[in-house]
Structures are given as structure tokens and as C-alpha cells.
Length: 255
Image 1 (cartoon, rainbow, N blue to C red):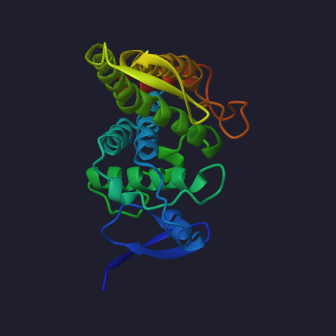
Image 2: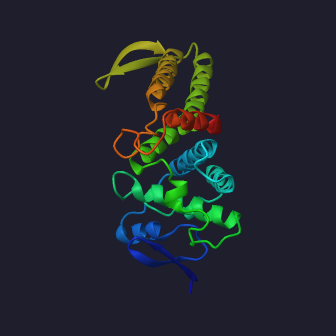
Image 3: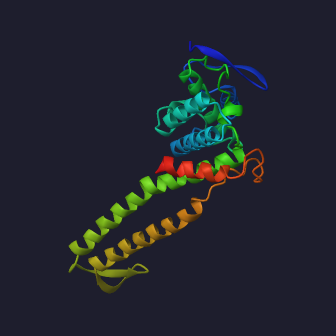
């Protein structure tokens, strides 16, 4: 039988697996949304780690967090970014549209790991609280949209664009390799006019090149972040300039 520990939230106590960092709200989401198997993408989990690290740094620099609490949060969040705690993010994509459960999953995991770093008792919310400390100055309504943008930008940069570039290079090589090979074009299931196989592959290569241009152009909008808007976009409960500082921190963390 799996051992458990008792975590609490505003609804009361709840048993959670003792070997996991998540808390009561994550466990309630597992209970309330027992549908589907589509886990939250790892890229979104890593992006939430980026956000929590960036916010802890900004809150530390403003003197809003005790230095030791901030440092523990920063370390714990950076571990999430590195992928060291992927197994502690069990939620599926089926949840509230605001991503509240995934935001709280990140808050609980990072705060409990920070408590552990500081030598405290996991689940005690002392000396690190998932809402008061890890989620300081944030709302699911700005954090989750930001996580989607950060995840998209990082995946495009690290996976999609390099993959497209490799494909274009391979197609360009075939353009040279297939020069002089004649084939018949087809229109409506009938033979049409001749062309070289090189010409055909040059079209494929150009399509990929245009796709790269479109992705890069779209990233300009993706790089705009909601973080700092808080619950309804007004920035309530943050300080002037906090959003820009957090954005700068995220840019540094993600390279």
C-alpha cells in the first residue's frame, strides 16, 4: 500500500502520495477530472517553472520575499525547468480553462520542494506557502496564458525550427541530386507536361523555407506575455514595472 501524508486546503484535509511534492489542490483535480489520459505537455510544465523562477527573483529583488525563501523557490523552480520533477505533474489537460489546477500544481510542487531544501516538513506550508510565496503577484489568468506562450516559443526555437531547417537542407540536397531526372507531371489523374524531379523538389524546399519565415514572424506575437496582468488584466496586486522585470528574467532564463 502506498504511504500518504495529509495536505490541507480551504476545503479541508486530503491524503496525497507521500513520495510526491504536489498538494491538496492537485490531488482534488485528479479526483474531480478523472477523464482522459492527455497529460499537460512537458513544455508547459517547464514553462511554469520558468515563470515561478522569474517571479521569485523579481519578488526577492523588491524585498517582498525573505531571501532564504526566495532562494529556495528559485532553486526548486529551476529544477522544474531542468525536468527533474516531471513525475510530480500528473494532471491532464481536462481542467478549468484558466489552467488553475496546473498553476496550483506548480505552486505546490515548487513550494514543497523549497520547504524540503530549507529543512522543513513537506506539506506544512512553513516556511514556504504555495499561494502567499510561490504564487505572489500572480494569477492563473496571467500565468497559464504566459506558460502557453513560453512553451510555444521554446518548442519552436528548440524543436520546430531546427527540424524544419534540417528538412530544408535535405530537400535542397535532393534538388541537386535529382537534376536531369525527367518525369511527367500529373493533373486530374492524367499525364501532363514534363518537369525534372529536381524542379519538383525545389518546390518542396521553397514551401519549407516559407514555413520557417511564417513561424519566425508568428513568434513576434508569441513573445508578448500576459504575466503581470494578474486576475483581470489590470495588474492589481503587483507593483509598477514588475511585469517588465519578470519578462526580462524569463528572457534570461530561457536564453
